[in-house]
Image 1 (cartoon, rainbow, N blue to C red):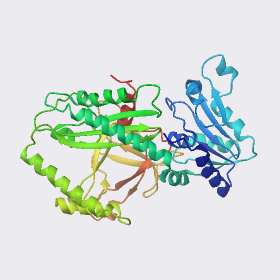
Image 2 (cartoon, helix red, strand yellow):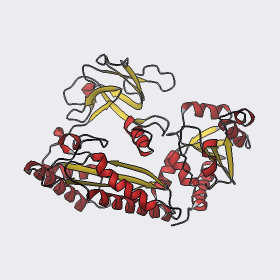
Image 3 (cartoon, helix red, strand yellow):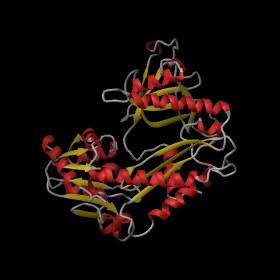
Image 4 (tube, rainbow, N blue to C red):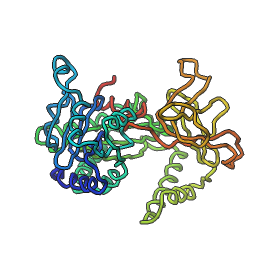
Length: 417
């Protein structure tokens, strides 16, 4: 196993700090904290911060993380408590952070704009800090993989391949999706158990939708559906090693496929191979997508996407120009992220979804954590007159995830039946 390159990574970060005139970097994103400190929390439901100064680093953790945080690459460890009497006697997480930053008067602090909450940003500014967004620089830094990451990715890939192979041996009619993948998962845990395994393993996530209906649905979790003769099955494994994910996805048939399924599968393989043969430096994803469609004979206007939410199950389907026009039975208000006041057409804010069609629960109006903006329908050119919604992504905290992603995490930890 390649040693964790703490010195090299911190050296690059401090070089960035010097260039940008930063006194501190306060990292809150789990991936970035792990990248620079090799620390992975049991849970991120409590404040955890990794602070990088000019000559020392600080890791702030709750008592829940105290024991295993000691192995992280940090110069100083600060533990806060939430139970009496220590909760009263010891400083809170943000009191600890304030004391660290107070070593410099009116410090310039690098933060991750895509992670830090508005409340936390205002708190730092109230302490006299001037905030600078370092998210783009960290993304670029992490995009170039060092030998440590390559080693972890190779190990994650090895585990993918091993668990996949074990499960595939048990594919047969009558076995449920969950039973099928459990064979590989159990073998995987047997392989890595023991004190001599040098890596930190996490995320035993896998998905195994089967049958026509389930393999056509996005983000489908494994269930109690039983494999049937001729079924198409998609099996995905996504283990993580020291924060580096591997992924292996395979599509296979249980027994002999039906003729129409076999034709569709061969067409997809043909399109995929055409794309793989055409990939080279300088080619963009849009060109590869167009190539696959030409091979399949699917015109641009026949490709559709949809947008929705569990709390707002009204699908916004794209038009032939790939825009999400507002349907007749829904409305969208774009609201200011600070005041929540409605914004005019074209301005970016939080997406507020409204519909009168849901009567099972009181969710006529749902405030999402997505950022987006509205555009007049006439600007589209497809012929539809209703405004269309452009979704830019999630606002604020990286910890905010979809219901599906949250369920996957709980399932992986064994916290759901």
